[in-house]
Structure formats: C-alpha cells, structure tokens
Length: 68
Image 1 (tube, rainbow, N blue to C red):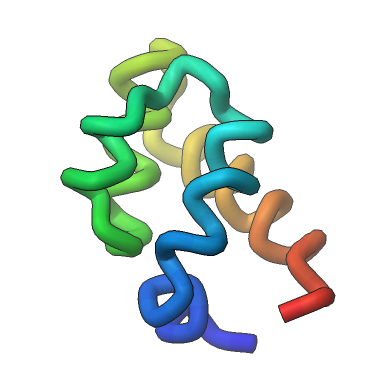
Image 2 (image 1 turned 135 degrees about the vertical axis):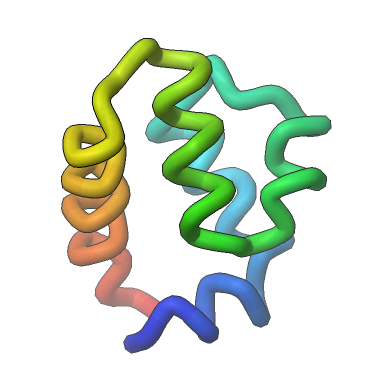
C-alpha cells in the first residue's frame, strides 16, 4: 500500500488516525486532508515531538494498516 491510498480513503482513515493521536481535532484532520507531511506537522505541534520522531510514529502507524 502506498500513501496515495490513505489520501484517497481519508474519511475512513480519519477514525484510525484519531484513535492513534487523540489530540488531533476534527478540524486538524479536515485541514490535513490525507497529506502525510501535514499529518506529521500536526503531530509535532500537538504532541511537542521532533520531526524525526513524528515521522517514525507515522511510519509505525502506517505499517500496521495492513487491512487496506
């Protein structure tokens, strides 16, 4: 699976993202609209993480999305 599938199915993934990163608001998720770099940026902002840590967390989450 590539990230384009996440973008294309963003409405379905929003719930999974919210489960993983509960500090992200619905407005955040609407703004992100499936864009990986924006997701990483919002995670950095909301959780106070370094960029490489946010990237790793998104990578880890993404690797667990086998059912797509």
